[in-house]
Length: 479
Ligand SMILES: [Zn+2]
Image (cartoon, rainbow, N blue to C red; front, top):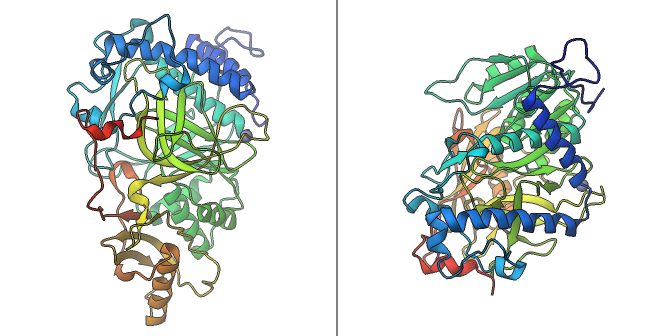
């Protein structure tokens, strides 16, 4: 019974309908509200967000020194909520500004009813990690949105979920077994088993375990899906029970969706989340685009002038965490870029992100200074004779030169090398000098994440990280 919520009860003799334990009851109470709010008209959702963002802005202006200094000219009165125009005058905050401020965005006064606080760290793929904080409320909301994701995609809760994720410590951790899928279902639904693997496990071993475990759902980074699917096609193995692949943590390319279909006849549902903000957007149940999780987060897609992007335009993802009073991010520049979408015909009023395109460092710079998002599709048309590639990564080293790191499926001939050079130049729309480096394995970055393309060129007039005292901070204020 896909998507049916068979609740685990704690009252003896009452199996269906059932009464869950207190945490399960809270999760279910939130879920009922989420079930309703997703169908509200966009303007009603926006109004509810205005009221909620006011609560956290008042908290920040009273208790968070970072915002007190940042907003010194503007006091936020409890009785008077900001209009959208006033809201858009609040400065956009960079990660660097929070890192440089003593104590970051930690409030001086906590709200005890939000439960004990816990600390976390972002993976720090840009260099220094950022210390984050959450509490019982944010964890409950994370769980509720996980459950919403299961319900949206009609997951069969009796199935086996296999996750491949970042591990800690110096060596890959061994396989772990769980009797429940995790926070989104724990205390509420009896699920099938969960299995977790460390992403640093060698690919041959991952493939062998995956075949042995034969899961119903695979949950991991898009780059791992692509690598495993290429392995499956080259070694001719299937996952007969697999019903859906779920991805997170990296940009999902169309080519990964297509290779997943070819290898296992399975679709992918992606989610867009971050360590500092939790779930940002989930893939629509009926389309490949994403719905912003407006009950937890306010997302603004801003162009270079700091104005809201229209559907079809790509801009910076700037967000406000509406419920995290221990780590309030207000108009926080994530460093990600996304394309704003038009409203969705599924009927949900939650705003649409057409696609997440990456971070600034994932953009190529052409010699004339133009930037572009590379189209890194190994199955691109016109490349019929592409030699087998198990893994690749492009690093732009200068305005004229790109390094292509490659794990080849077999030793490459001169013709093969010419073909992959042509592929790189086509993806970047410019005849770059392409240096090929052959590797046995391409290592992952911080937090287990992988980037297909990274640009290491900085243009001379480009600001890097902006700080709180930096006048650049007001660059993104709407005018
Ligand atoms: Zn939709």
